[in-house]
Each structure stands twice: as structure tokens, then as C-alpha cells.
Length: 208
Image 1 (spheres, rainbow, N blue to C red):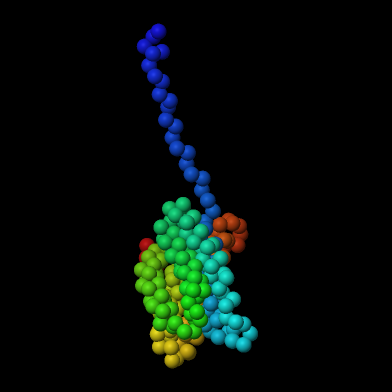
Image 2 (tube, rainbow, N blue to C red):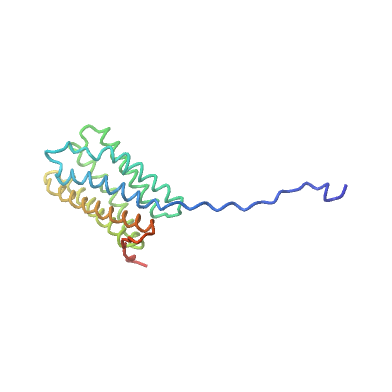
């Protein structure tokens, strides 16, 4: 028996296959955020007074703004997009948390304004540094975080004061603007992902 025959043969190590790319989950995350924000903001802006219970957003806060957006965040991790992963995962969890809070706390939207105010303050702090970082993404994404920042601050003030419902109503209108900006940014992502003739501009980063 030769030396080569007596020696244990070690199989060649095959290089790991490159992970297949996936579609951009950003438009889904933005759409889930936009729709849920629109429904809640319509309530805050008093658009639903007299024609709705004001809870139209609740199921979608859990399913679309919550779970779908959280999934978009997980897929952003897969795409190595730390900004998108952090933003979508956080706000997906925000909507799920809001759903749970409203379901657990009796009459949460009407009797525990200071609790909601503190929740909004906490998310406004998070949103502040995400707003700063979004200036390096593009103008459309920056617009989402800017309008959201204003919405969270005004709604927090409105929930702290409690005596001036006009402040919360103003926050509702700001939320409606936020939803429209997020929907536009989502549509731009879809148009660019398709690669067809219809392209919606998102603008250059403010900081590059």
C-alpha cells in the first residue's frame, strides 16, 4: 500500500454559497407605517367624530403597522441595512406595543393621557437621532422622520396638558402629513424597485 493510499483523505472545503438577494422591504415597512399612522391621525384630527368609534386603526396597528413593519425590519437586517432595520423594527414594535397597551389598559386613549405622553416622549428621543441619521439617506426619508418628529412632540404636549384638545388635534393633522410623506416614499421605493418608466424622485441626501 502506498503512502497516498494509507493517508486519510480530507475533503476539499467548499466556499459558502453567496446568499441570494431579496427584494427591498422598505416600501412595505413604509406602507404599513403610513396606513396605521393615517388611521390614528384621522382619529386625533377629529375626522372620525360622529361617524366612527375611533378604533379603526387598532387591528391594523397590530397586523400591518406592527407585524408587517417588524418583518420589514428583520428583512432589512438580512440586507445589511442597519438604518432600515432599526427604524422598521422599532416602529413595528411601537405599534404592537400601542395595541397591547390599549387592550390592557381600560379606556387607555381617554383616561391615561400622561402615560401616552411619556410613550411619545420616549419615541421622540429615539426619533431625534434617527432624524439626524436620515439626513444621510435621502430627502424623502428625511421628510418622514421630520414630520414624525413634529407629530410626536405636539401629541406629547397635547397629552400632557390635557386641557387643550386643540394641541392633540394639531398633532393629528401633522400625523396625516406624516402618513402622506411615508406613502409617497413607499411608492417611490416600489417604482424604483420595479425598474419601469415611472420613477418617483426621493431627492439627494442632505448630508453626504
